[in-house]
Amino acid sequence: MNKNAMSQQQISHEGDDWRVLSTGAERDGLVFCHLASTTRFNQQRNGANPVQICDWVPVEKVAA
Image 1 (spheres, rainbow, N blue to C red):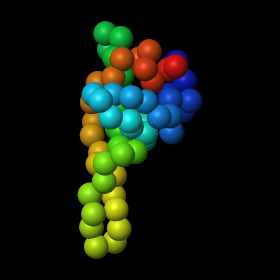
Image 2: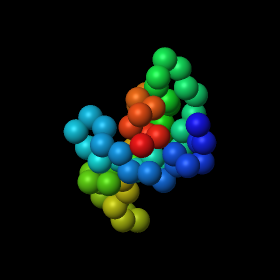
Image 3: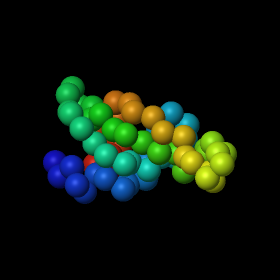
């Protein structure tokens, strides 16, 4: 699996749409991802910043 191809994809995970910022380790059919929301933002002094999470995501979602 090409990890560079996985970056900058948009996926649906836990009822929200996310942009894949980076991917990491793989195990048991899951890949560890750093995700940024495309729908939820925190308003700060320098503008709106997307909510970010790290989570294990099924490889099929990311590799599609």
